Length: 129
Image (cartoon, one colour):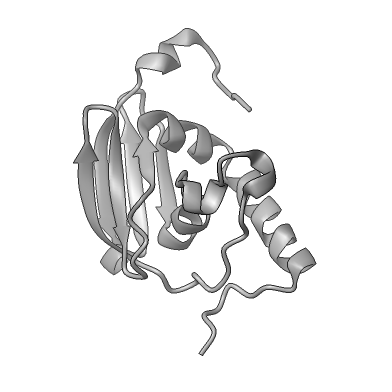
């Protein structure tokens, strides 16, 4: 699924990646002026990691119980991505600039799809006590 408007998007890199709200939000601002505010929960449940996405679309997992998850650390991954460390121990996703751009542009639909999967599977956003 690509929402690329033109090939100029291929070279877009963030000018700023900043944690706010004590690690509950990540703000990504691109050099073309696009800015996306991601909740940590959204990034955790849509992580590009194999743990979440699997190795094939049929293996994608619906991750419940992450309403209160926080990002504790951001680590560079070359010149094309960052690795986000979450307080639940998840640290295997490599979040590329392209991921932030495409996911940010499609955030509303992706979030609605996630909530619908949660409903269908009888899962909750709240952690199990």
